[in-house]
Length: 553
Ligand code: ATP
Ligand code: MG
Image 1 (cartoon, rainbow, N blue to C red):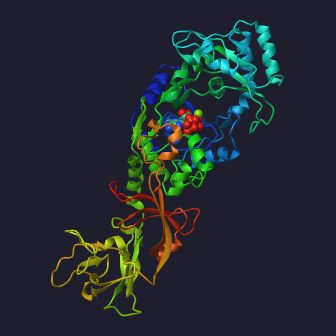
Image 2: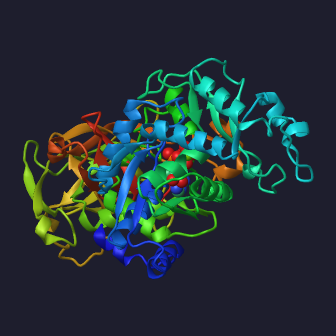
Image 3: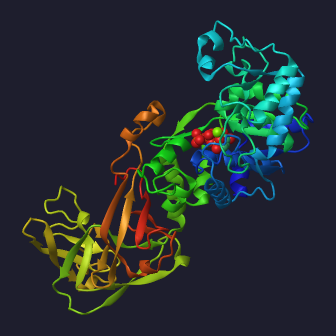
């Protein structure tokens, strides 16, 4: 991973950090990754992780992991643990710098009272409804209005202390920064810093009934941890003046700098924890680690490696404008990696029986197949050949188009690594489906070409019927049919789910050796796709990615 990050070219964040170091603004680099523990990490977070940990590493600095748990709703220890596991899986480490935003509640409270004392914050009594009313929040041409803005400092101090003491119901009061009610940036129109919430906090219990807003708490957390560069996605850009205002007006011990980068958007994918949680909670997917999920645990269960995901993140780069990345690029990264290292095996997904009429019943011969065509160090294996075989139904055509080189009536194909097979009688079931295909093999062709020089163009894979085993495979496809899910309103997401995103095949034949595969082990099933043995179901192989991009499973 060191290499991947070093290799990636310079970007505007690195340039900014370099300038800060050269100008002496900072003499070190310290970043942080601040996930909200209200869901599992997804591939978008991975982009942020690569930036946060990558910049620190590049400049010999450090990166903290901080759970942004200032908002008490929906946070859970399950998420806290999963987030740590996923970050470690990618190969990043925060060492002993693991923090919680809620650890600073006491400090947040002190800085808030400091602002009140300085006349820079006040307790406001506008209701939630009034906050939305143009008469109070104003619009582009009218400033916002608060009748409580000029209330005496002493009164605000007293009310704020009583808000904390739990004397008032939710919504009765808020603490607001006194900045600029006429600002063209709505974030600066006296933003709310604290609100009353009677919600138990996953770490603080019922200690607090006032909670700081993200825009107030985040810069303070950064400053207290000595963060130099607070890197975040682009939606925080308009909040930056407020970030700087908090840093400038609270007597915090250091002055971090916020820099924003574009969010990752992927085609046919939704990257919103809220919606991913909906998929889990409604049972549309089989948990956060469903192999179709864009979560890191989903990608892991699907068979993605950390290397392929990091490779993807370094290829997409870091830009200042939002864009849509084709999910095919992510697939390309894992395909490329597996092409180079996944051992090859045979599986017959849609088995149809072949009876070799000129082969002795009970006889077994072994043919040697390479485990990887380009990597002899991966060795070879012996596969048994018998009178009854399986081939894939899709390799046989009764009424073939021109230039069809696989098995067809009267035709001949190479059985991969073994004999040439000539097609004989096709026996059908009553419903017209194929029961078995009879044929004959050219027994001279076990180790080479026919002596009469005839050319056979097609090669198909096969398995011995008695010496193969049964397994299940799940053919995964994109979770959404729409390419740009950003254009779809969230209430229509469900309607865009791909009904064929997981197709299960239950009577697949596999090589016997695959019975010894370990959960998570990856293979190429020759002429088909890459697969990974599922970590939950012991006899199920997950399709990671097809062999070619154009392949439509
Ligand atoms: P979500 O919408 O998925 O809940 P979030 O921004 O609320 O995303 P956080 O847990 O707050 O999730 O995110 C932690 C960090 O990851 C933040 O710094 C955020 O900027 C970054 N991040 C989240 N989603 C993306 C994304 N799609 N691309 C890049 N960075 C992201
Ligand atoms: Mg967030």
